[in-house]
Image (cartoon, rainbow, N blue to C red; front, side, top):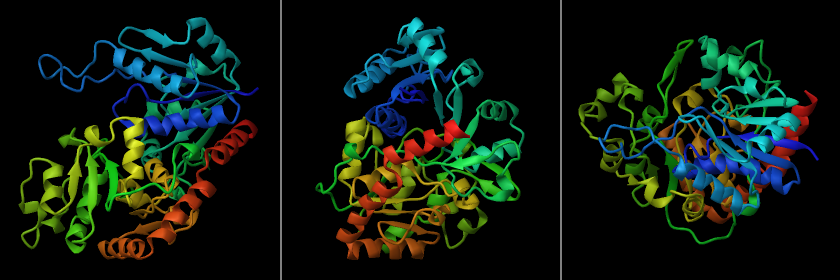
Length: 409
């Protein structure tokens, strides 16, 4: 039986349920397919203390009880007890599998799938026959390589084969040392029931920023902040349609992009002062909710998606500008639940059909028309959404193609 290791950040981000689904669907899918699958979290990242600790400014968690309890409960739930390991860097301690079992798994594994490059030191896993790197952040990943982020690049080149959610990475971002093979997020369809009741609202789950913006070859590789502002007037044009955003309260002001000059006109956005992005969105008519209240765990996250009528979302500026063909893991979950997806154009229409169940936009007017089309023909587009998930994101198809390519390349 083929033995496979999956990496991730499930325990590290135990309060971010979407992140859990991103990695767990690899593990669940491989387990259902009959592979001998194990999960190892060895990122070198320290756990967060989300309340700032006793002094309000201590963001390092001194123990990992919550992290490993969460990880254990997930793997127990899916019948994968004793198939996980978590490294706590502050004390250099391993949890989960015994040291003996973990070493035996690593020494005998046929394939390691390093999802999102979460391994701190892939060179520690060279006894595995094949190391596969999964780039889940196309455009940003390639720009970092172009900008000579040496340590980052070395971690990638330590792998035998390289896959990317960017199925259409442009030539100017390619590197002769790497051959990026296309892959997609795997969705375990049995976890996403269809034909469930929904509320009259289009939703998404997002961070305003995730890390600092970059520039390369005259293009900006920024976050969702500026992209959302480009479409902020959309809600005022759709007075009878609810647009809801589950937006994290945790903000990093030093990661935000400066407003472009054209926002300064007509008494506009640049002249207004808002204490938080949520306040700004609310001012323009958007409904904003706290994800820690509506989708804090895998079940409530799934319920939030299922109870939505569909998704409307912008993309990170880097995806919108580079057009690498990236498609969101979150959006794939909406499709699996039979919920139409209306998202900013990132170039994925070259490999995934749009216009039925999935729609893309580049302007506010296009976004408006796509929502009205879904409203007018909802049953048809909901049905097509699930069909597209089955055709393009079914875990059994995506993972088998990934394994076959990884072992042969």
